[in-house]
Length: 312
Ligand code: ADP
Image 1 (cartoon, helix red, strand yellow):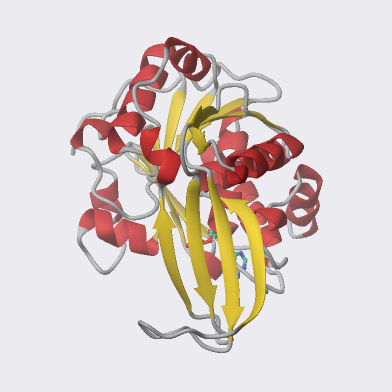
Image 2 (spheres, rainbow, N blue to C red; image 1 turned 120 degrees about the vertical axis):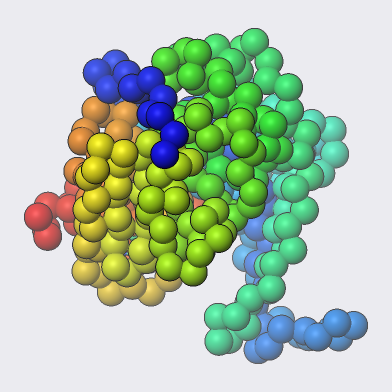
């Protein structure tokens, strides 16, 4: 097993914690129909919803709603979607001062959903793919944070550059390795905490059953989310604990992973022990799953606390 990287600065926390998300921002265009069209076919829809999304934007909103001072680094396009995405982030309390606007299309996800909940999704990264070559100001924002949170919907080199800026600035790094994609080798010694669901874990280790030892070769601390079963925390110091989910009437688990990860970053940024942080993140994921919607169902801190206390 690889040696542990330098211990993250556990004590250096601010209140509220400063979370920096380097990630994607998209517009989700969601059409609902009785069934999905086959290639070449046109199907009449029942409903249509347009909502800002992307894992970076969602997790930034989740962190801000969970009580952090949160900045999103990334890129929106110069189109009308970009204006709406930015307005949504600002209304949710996310600092967009450093969000780039690049000429052209914003990231767009075209999503079709049938009545059985089956979907087909086409994602065009648009401006997200232009988020490269971090500026001195972006590096300074990362170095000034308590926790950097990244996902895998922006260019891999940018994730590596952001993690390097965090490491040299003493900022802890959480990588939510979603969507499943090959991890850049350079990231392996830069991530302090890896967060994955079961399919992302399988993609990383190449196994069907979760292989925690395999994941711990990537990062010294790992959180594996288990949907309605809760989450598992393991680290290179030998801790391995499963933290059960909160019991809720789950109606829609869309964005539950984003609610979980954003809240986890906040709790770790507050200096909480990681098992306690995972327990609180479980409450955030469950609170999200009991409400229909994507970024609109990301819970506020008071809702997370209320659920956490009700089943303490
Ligand atoms: P993803 O959406 O990324 O696949 P999961 O489905 O594992 O992630 O969900 C993330 C977290 O949200 C879980 O670890 C759990 O805490 C919470 N969660 C998800 N679904 C439920 C559920 N049905 N009941 C309670 N909590 C849930």
